[in-house]
Image 1: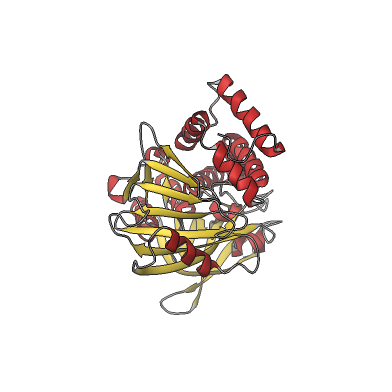
Image 2: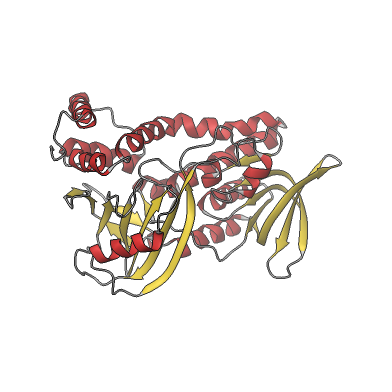
Length: 393
């Protein structure tokens, strides 16, 4: 078999890249090992739903409120005005994207990536067939590595791909009642508490009849299951049936390079495109898949390997500033419970709430209200310097 592009990894990034390339008339293979469900809160903003034509059938819940919870137990409810945040279940959402790519013309291969081989002017992907256990080889002009934060493609093929920083995320999918204790089926809870996570956060995200309850951390020695048990207890969800448990690394920043200057380009978690502070990944993964497909198209058309660098340039041109701002926020506020307490206090400000969700829903920093930005900046300085008390709003 011979292809224009072999996409390694069938998550949102890989499936999107494969679909875009297939729709453009390219011969594409989508290699996925199948059966892997990534731990994920499952939140998708309206811009993703619109940009990637996600049908209502994939939306398992519509969230109207986000609740921030501080180490002291302070709760700040942020209404989502004029819309909702959609929730998806990755078990079904990822397969929907893979099946859509196949309908567009991508050929699905089920198995595990082993290596890239070259010789005689040709590039070949070696993989192990899941059904037979045998090694198989496909020839290709280009490879898109979309195989996660510990990407085998990135480690083997892209400089720096073996040194990506990450946190470990763990969650439990539970069978959630309509309402129980402090649980609300139309509200996402984000818990900033060192007893749950010393350097990230915990979450309770409704998925219709189910819910994702989990946390993340980059520190060694944290018992992820015990921390999640504490989170479930605090939310009144200890007695709920546990459907499945999942864990995976989540990258902390984009790699400095996404291609090997020859025949490989990265996408999604493999390229490190999970938003700092929020940990949001699905939207940025799908955008990463789209720009990787765009770069592959340019390279195939021109024959210039340098065109693969277009993927990173396009992504950072639109989203680089947001990533820098969110990275600074995480560095400033996630380092201690005292700082996390101040962060939740800052979130009490109505202007912070509006600007935050306008940016989240539309994926752009809002610049329309300079006075609001000035007020937020001054409050931010006050909290970081300690001039304002931790409970100031």
